[in-house]
Image 1 (tube, protein in one colour):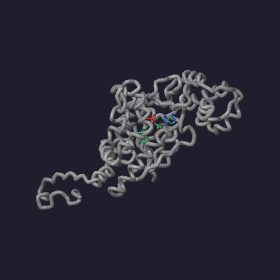
Image 2 (cartoon, protein in one colour; image 1 turned 30 degrees about the vertical axis):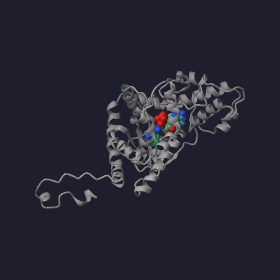
Image 3 (spheres, protein in one colour; image 1 turned 120 degrees about the vertical axis):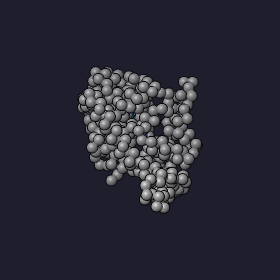
Image 4 (cartoon, protein in one colour; image 1 turned 60 degrees about the vertical axis):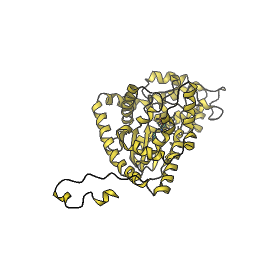
Length: 353
Ligand code: AMP
Ligand code: TRP
């Protein structure tokens, strides 16, 4: 069965971009057709300045929202990255396979580092090495497919490169993964700044629809979305990015094709009204289920506990194999006490391969 792995960072409240670009595909398609793992990648939230209490709160909220978006723990594995040591264990080995030039070429690193320096801050080393940890997340599970938005395509490409390189140098250890992008809304743009991604860590609230925004707030944000000069509703990402974004959101929420949907609108106002309604309807069931789950925190905790245990069992053999392949001496297991152990064999020869 195809193995699928994806993750979400608890760096801010989840957005419509996360939902349309990733979560909806995970719940609607991936968990049904594949052996899928979905991870709250909390270690990745520490790569930029963070507030410990907030990361904890957002991790819990992200887990609750993943379940609210209909991920079913009977069908897939939902867990928190830091609960499974194998991610960090494997990351170090992959750092010994990756090069610093490769890391410095990552677009997201360049952008985030420049932003951080622009604010006069310092750049954490973990921001540079973060794509290696992401590769470890993916490779530890023998992942075939990584469903992500297109901003993550370069990171998945790196995971592929590292898998191939490791396998060539040290013998076949990892499955070589590939990214799978959703058909529409691979990139939902900020409503106020339609040339940049609707990202949850950005602080420009009015252009971001959060999954837990009340319907009235959603409507207000959509109605105030920046549109382009001109009045005709046409689908053209280059010259009319604001309208194109609205058409793509509409297509993603209520079906159809943005190229054709524009024919039905004579004005931006009418389009915005329908987009607002479509988004409110898309979020309604998620918000209702989120409220139910908040009333039952023990359920969410149980899912995360079971998920981590299952994930650990899946990752361990691959990560152990990588430790052996790269040349690390296996730990010698304790000789068993009792007469049989004293009878000469000591540690099983297999354990000291
Ligand atoms: P992140 O918010 O960076 O943790 O991303 C979690 C998942 O959501 C990743 O697969 C991203 O590619 C996807 N994602 C985040 N923001 C957007 C967006 N604005 N449009 C489409 N997909 C997104
Ligand atoms: N880097 C991803 C993001 O910012 C999150 C992530 C971490 C991830 N590890 C992953 C996604 C592994 C897919 C697979 O969105």
